[in-house]
Image 1 (tube, rainbow, N blue to C red):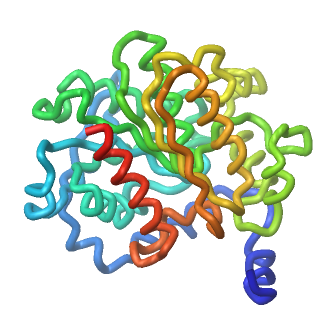
Image 2 (image 1 turned 180 degrees about the vertical axis):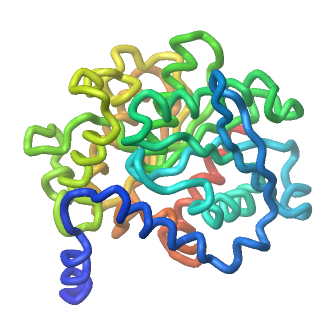
Amino acid sequence: MTKAMRAILNALSYGNIEVEASRRLADLKKLDPMRIFLKKLDTEVYNGEYKVPIRLYFPTEKRMEEEKEQSVILFFHGGGWTTESVENYDRVCARMSQSTGQLVASVEYRLAPEHRFPVGLLDCYAAASALYAGRLLPEIPPERITVMGDSAGGNLAAAVCLLGRDRGEFFPKKQVLIYPAVNNCYTEESPYPSVRENGQGYLLTSVKMEDYLKLYERNSEDRQNPYFAPMLAKDFTKLPDTLILTAEFDPLRDEGEAFGRKLREAGSRVEVHRIKGALHGYFALGIAHLHVQESFQYINGFLKELA
């Protein structure tokens, strides 16, 4: 990494989260002029009396014909449980659908701090429950569904799979976790070296991660809940085969890789790939970016092997 790049990263890696300012910055992605050309459809499912919006993205007919059977990725976006949206991830999810040849169902779960844990998780769970029960896309069988998320969305994906198993309502066959936030501490007390090595100067800081947790939690007891921090689960059996992608210069790197080891030790088939030179958030970059291309090579290989 050049000195100039290091200086830019340090300047951008400011501490503490100001929610409204962060949301306004994230909303700049809505200005993407290519969004009008995306092939998509809006629908919804119920979480109690609340309607959870879901946006479906479709690959081109040619890309769909290349796949033997239609499959779907249930996707939860990142943003520290407090920012980002389905709208902001339009390009990401459309690219995902085209690159994998699968439908993508992106969930507009409610955000903290207005809606703290477990509200967003239960919105995601309602979407998963509807999908696995055949109420959302009845033509797609459960074994053709992949649960996927990046960052805080990776946390939600892992937690949805845990909760589905614990309730006995559904058992996902596969999940893809992209630099997932699965632990509950980003201070000096963290057991993971990447929190200290990459906690400053690489865009996502350890201070920001602590702020995100404080905005997401209702109280300090939530941090000990495995649906809040999936790394704390006491039982890792009967969980999906899993692909985990981590970024080299990311405070979340080591916990994601440790989560993969927990799953593998409990009997799941697990792939873990560290993307060299990558920062947290790289997956939202354009498809021409080498880190994104490398990620889709791993994702497509994983999906095809388990098809």
